[in-house]
Length: 242
Image (cartoon, rainbow, N blue to C red):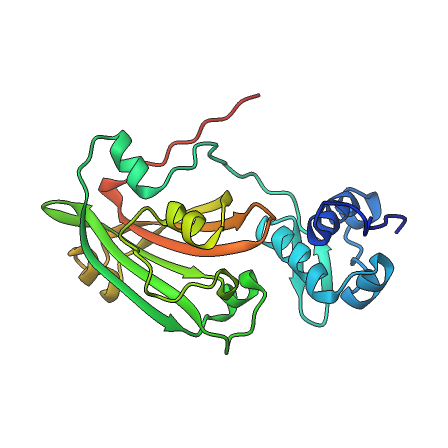
């Protein structure tokens, strides 16, 4: 590896490490399945901490560019076809554009231990508490979406914030956190007992699930969001340019 980190640059170290890793994934040997150097070697070669390196690797893992497995190492993932929306809006903005009045049916704020998936996304341990926000929202006459959002402890949320206000405006105003990048996954599923109770549908009803991974201006993860929508109440539109 012939790349190097500029420690005098104004670009954050983790962002530089991410750029270098992206270049590394384009090299033929790694495209063909060779395991990347381990974290200790990479961190030493770049003269950065392992936590900084893990932050960069974690972002590429969640983008699907890298695959990280215990006792095996980190490899370049096989190419996949993905649809991407360039129109990232908050839920309130989406509904306003469609002219749909929104009612908040439930709002719950709790502290919880993240599962392994969420902990890996945040690069924290599962025994570190994170703030969880749950909302049930919909038209005035009925709910059609259940949200669960988890926030990185780094943000400094206390749970006393006004979560009825637009979320990203509140994070920027009160915590100087600017959400600049969102990556999403859409999948289909059947409503289990919990979701059927939240959305007032029969168990087994079709549900659209949307995972949203939100990053700040420094490329650091700030929110892990899961939304479950009634299938007949949600349309996801993408726009692509060539």
